[in-house]
Length: 397
Ligand code: ADP
Image 1 (cartoon, protein in one colour):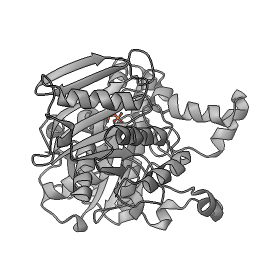
Image 2 (cartoon, rainbow, N blue to C red):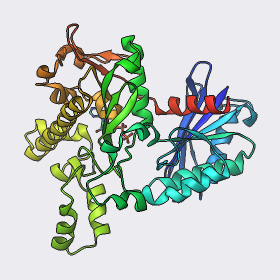
Image 3 (cartoon, rainbow, N blue to C red):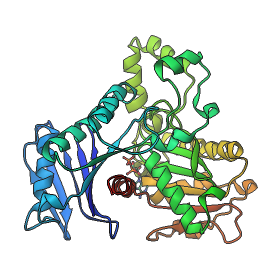
Image 4 (cartoon, rainbow, N blue to C red):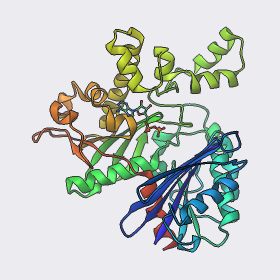
């Protein structure tokens, strides 16, 4: 069985064609600048990387180009479109409507559209990806895999905010959490690696990338997570502020003489480590600047690490114990120095890390805790596309 995984953004579309027998991508790539000038498709298959510059006025054109590339005689991966058995779509928000992945029907699309107000930056693009695919491949079954679904197991005490309760019942204002496919994948992989039943494990997963979130996974279920009503909450990120005193928005609006929407843009795009440092949202740039003595770059790194550390402590308490910490995503997988800042001084929790092993790069799982460490510390490359493909294969199977 072959599953095409689609992750559609507002002007981009990433894809992977996964052969479910091997669970490996036989082709992958992405379209950039859809709806803008100089649109570009980058396609990788059979050891070749092809760049195709062609106008992509909309997502339907982009999908058509992707399918053409997939069946191209020279650099394709399949002979005809019929070899694609199903399509799995990443969708950001399920609200409380879906607790797991679902086969896409017209009703599902309607519900996704209705939930657009909860994720106005991402959900419309996800839906466009689905409708564009349906137009081009009307007879291929499709599945929606939601970023929020893994967190649907959170208890009420973790997701209801301290505001009037009817804000929740009337307007759906609650903690949802994001990056669910990644937290689910790495926590499952951790249990497999440790040879334990996930029901017996209390894990804190740290997905640290451009967007970062931290999740408490107790018995295989998400019981709390740092991102919140939107992906703006939690730890400070590349450009997003993370948790703030809610009074700050109004105060900033008054001081700057701007609308709350404009403050929202500042909190999403000009804050986080970029806003603190004034240097970069990229952790490589921050490390370099910090090494050259830039105080604000160093401060941004310290604030990020401190915030992650506090979540580990909070979630160990929330779960009443801790067996394993997992680092994943761009920073979690690659930035050994940031990992060291985060796991340092956690010996009182039973966390002992081999600092040399932390610097080693391995294929697959890297166990960086010492043999005797009570809490296992693992670096696990995330694979959200594989989770989407697995769910899709299972549902249409
Ligand atoms: P996204 O959230 O967009 O999926 P990623 O998970 O790819 O992001 O993470 C991107 C971030 O990972 C970059 O902003 C960069 O700060 C960080 N990163 C990637 N590679 C390294 C590295 N070798 N060292 C330090 N940071 C890295």
